[in-house]
Length: 330
Image (cartoon, rainbow, N blue to C red; front, side, top):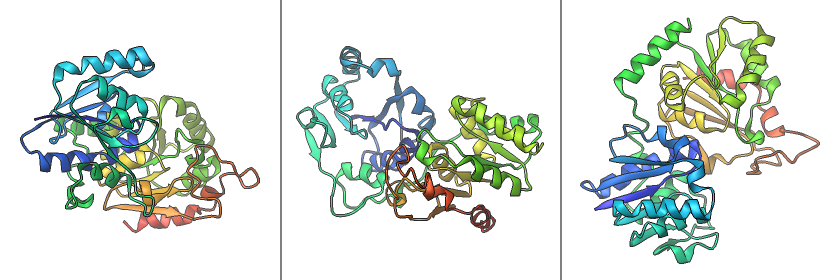
């Protein structure tokens, strides 16, 4: 059997999809399982033993009706017997429909039910962690998130050796990683909080982020004037960033994709939640500690803070000392 899985579009969601792939492999041990994803999340699935192959689509390949149609038709040659959709978008369902896979499985919504052969409805009565929402598409009551959490992200020996050598080149040993940034402004650690943290950490620190975050990261470093703090924001591919994170001693994370990565790699991670709901999207990892103040306006689940009087109250209420105390308990 040949099974295609259209993966989530965000890095954190992609990490939370790994237990789904392990569960799928458990059910179909001899099947060919193909991850179909956007290029920017493909690094999460590389080298994974539950995945036989990865098909990547650039943003332009799924940006409109014609390009999505052509991309779906291009999947016909793979001859998929089943197609699971871990993305809730109409576009994902249309892609699966155009692939001519006879079995197309996903959640309802966005007017896409007619494009699916098997439709699931999300429970409105209880909260399910996103990883379990994915696993529930397999319709097997005996599957559990924790049971199939491993393996997670898989790095090769050469990638690990590269990371060790690169840290030596950066003249930094056993750093603490910090991920202060996020695509969603509501989840970004306030700058004054980040500065307060960095001033209190008497160890080597690596600041991670995207290319868009590099200027702000550099400004942080210039203001702190501490040789032990360095930025690699935007300096490496996601795959190389994952390798570097794997060699960090611990991590302090915003509610972001990088926080999911460090947790998945079993790096001690203190994850700061505010706008997001940890019951739904808490990073998966035995060495993860979530701090969430549950202020009156959280979780708002919004990408921008709408509390104009108390902007980012949910994150500003988290004290730097409580973050460092949590870190010291690992």
